[in-house]
Length: 560
Image 1 (tube, rainbow, N blue to C red):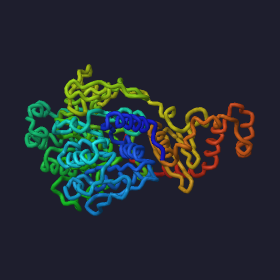
Image 2: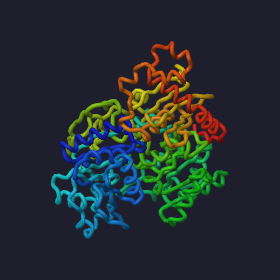
Image 3: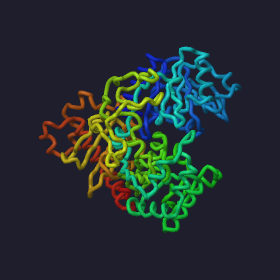
Image 4: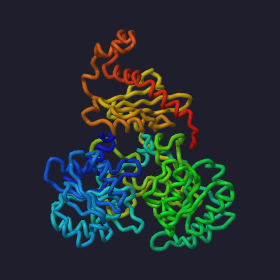
């Protein structure tokens, strides 16, 4: 497996910080490949040594996911598990459930660690995590602590400074949108006559008083206006709605159903089986709108979701980002055939967007260098070393002055993006077969991928040795290019990512010429790699046509 170029930068910066500071925090949003990057960091630390590492997570599914992806990144490193069912430290890297490991009886058996990795590192200051961290440093004062999170600013405003004194790197949401790994949000702030009242809602310990919000928002005229606006701006899209209370969510779901829209409710008081059955029906497309109360904010993803409705304000930007993030994932064409997603509509009937502005949590998008060492500055409040582009300290919450007017509705949903040229940054050379961008091909030693523009749409198709050809993406060209490039990354290695190899620029071989059109012999600029890309297209053309025809024949649920 091969990391994306941006992931490699993240790993390099994280390793550099660990070597100089012995602890560091990396910030990476949805779709950045957080698990892949933390696996690469851990693998670099332990590979070829007798070092021991532990990767912490707070849920069973995350422990399993982390271990599986670690194995793909580091196939030669042994692993083991400490959770409710198993307690083995036999592997060089152990994947542990934090609630299980934090018990005194389990900590006793923990060996001296050289590296402790904390997934979802915003939990690192919780008592259970602190017991593990403290025990790690007691056993080995030289142990390195590495944390990764998408939301470093906790809702309770408790800083991470006591665990991390620097931020190695931060991947921006706008980077992932510009590179085709997330879809762009289209934000609408809609006042249905309640914004003035919402602005007066008092804040309690963790958030706005949701009882007061319910008294304002949970009214039939307000809900009817919400549904009318949804039908105007997002009808036909699978939608997740965030409500203030269970009663509010129930009434919203009932109102959608009364309006002829299939809808359902999930909340924390539901039984596990009922909640899973409801989410499964939504995943199959049997339900179009799903209302919830703080259940789907974190740890849940349904990529076809292309509308997020905010019927509650959020006093913390991290919560708003988590809610909106449920709709920003791109769609895997094989997993969800017939679904095209080019953006996500955000309907904010509260005040979150007005309070917090863009989805960038703490980075000025103009200040980040694309390569090399990230410039840093010192936080005046907690003295942490953080990237120079940060506008809000991820460790203590200190805010630097910004010229951006977060209250300007016209600016909402827009990003000052750095232009990211995916083709230039790819580890593989992409060949424009026809010279007009209609067919783009790239290949490694064992895999190939192509992006094809037909009838106003792009289709990404890929294949690999011992794997059938697959439809990788449908829709916008940048999303298809990203999906195709990821296919090559997943099926090739550093050795086969031969973009810069000198021999690729040599003339084609006689064997290649034997399969190419005779006119190619007269093209003296043709290179060996370009010939290889042309042959990948020729030999796989039937499979490519079949995958595109299947996609065209599907009933597309267009989310555009």
